[in-house]
Image (cartoon, rainbow, N blue to C red):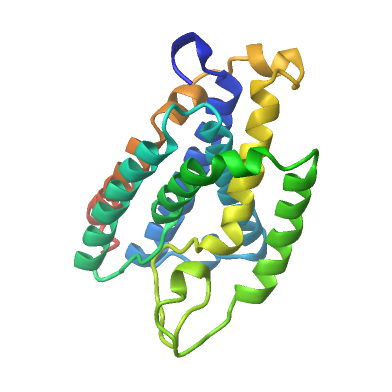
Length: 235
């Protein structure tokens, strides 16, 4: 989606997810660096909201896949960024094995190679299967532990597994694929006219720079939190 072809509401929703992600990580930095109460980062309400907006971001990535000229190239670019994030996370002693960027890059390449197959499914079969399989694989993989060490990309971890950010293929791939189905409907013009013409302030610009912000926001927030702690003599 470039130039006039961009749908501002999609960018705005992505931008909203990015803003909430930054707020989420800022709260984490406050707890880890400034010893703020853990409840401001993890509580029943925030935990649910985190899952909802992470799912929305993944779904929107699936939507955008319907507008991409090459999802394989797009996915490779994201995986390169994911490798940089992993390297930095290891140096910071908080390793990320399969975080959001790892998943999104994998999903983009997977869809780029198999998209024609999903397009052949009749009627609402794809979204129905995605909803059912998301629920089914969440139950099958979430919290499962095995001695086999190479299953963690699929959501099954080994004892002692840790990842600072973790979005396994199952169940999230079905959220992504649901987004590709939704993207087809958007591309065909089946949404209300207002969806294609609305242009909220600021959020679309943030959404268009999502990858750059994803890469840079945590070092910036980490540094600002450290600086605040020094200024106010908290640390």
